[in-house]
Length: 290
Image (cartoon, rainbow, N blue to C red; front, side):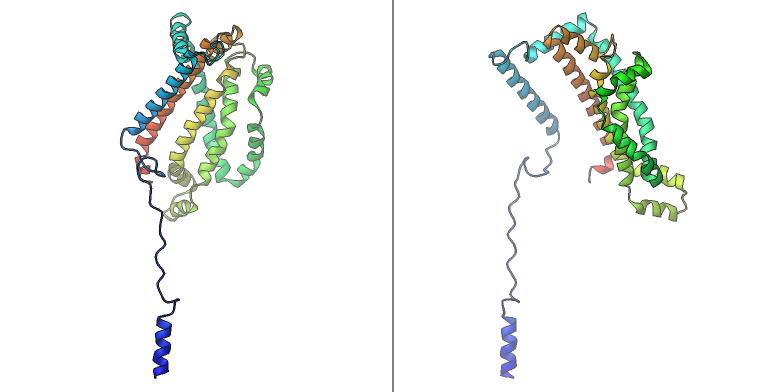
């Protein structure tokens, strides 16, 4: 009996049975620089504007001190002055409007084609197997190399400009749409079929609604890509648009005017992107918790 009690006491007091101390966790960093820590309400805009003004101030100081050559890197104040002069004397805002119409026309055409094709590529493996190699091949082709072919096919009118903008957007967007469709869980389709939905209803009412938030975000990104091809599209026998203005100023080494056109493209893109972000947040408020 004594031996059994001793054995029991040894087992109870063995190191294997002694609870190990809890692992010491590193203290979480506090403040706005903690990983994924949200900023206080309204501070996003304050930080963004403050950082932008700081960059412009440093740029202005560097240019004013003569650390850069004005011909190659003018000060922000010089660029803004050139932009104001171009607005009053060279119809810069009209050129911006023409470029905006071209970009949106090509982008909407690409979106209307890419969304159904991308859904079909992901939803039906036969379609994906047939189209994906061609899409992958074409999306790696440099758009500037296709300018001569575009001129041969469409001439030097608006069709060529729209085609080049479409070409730089469609083949990237169609794969993003296919990926969005591919990420819809199969369980969604099974539940839809269980409650009596047919294939068309499962695509329209289940899959499309599930992929819509990510789809809208990818459309916003693709619109930015479309703007990046504007200069290429508007150097083809163009007499209007921001690309034409920038290219014409480049011939005479008018660097402030070149940078004014570039800055205006950036401002239009930034305003459009922020508007689409706002619409995304308003339309999909249920994603904030996620």
